[in-house]
Image (tube, rainbow, N blue to C red; front, side):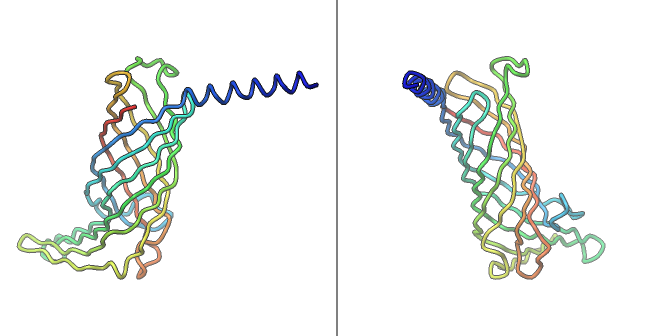
Length: 213
């Protein structure tokens, strides 16, 4: 019995140390564009126009398995909504802009030879929750002649929470560097303004980035 217990302990130790040895940590940076709107919780997007904004951030990817990794990000992202009032109010546009520090925690699966791809290419898919802290919030009424901006941070919620889903492709430059393209959908689950408890952030983002190991 003692011998069996010893063998089990040795096997467990070998498995744990081999997993640690195979673990990889990658650090990356990205920049991109996103289209956003604000709609009710059951809708993927609203019928309003998408508001085009920017995003940029850093990421830490901890790969603990040949396929699986956990990715933590810290991003600046601008979200909101846009309503075109052409023919209604002299062609003016109403834009609502919310700026956030966005922190997603994602479980990612990465495939290369499993799909028969060349070793320099792989594809990845991920999902996970995000938390965003509000930096600023404003309503903007724009026309061909001028623009009026109103600070509405006192009406906005201090945070936004939701789920992120997405995927992308990677091109390996060498054993320690790679570039990637990422397509993501953020589905907001929390209220964004105190004056309307139906509105949530909905965002589609496209970014490119660089990672090194």
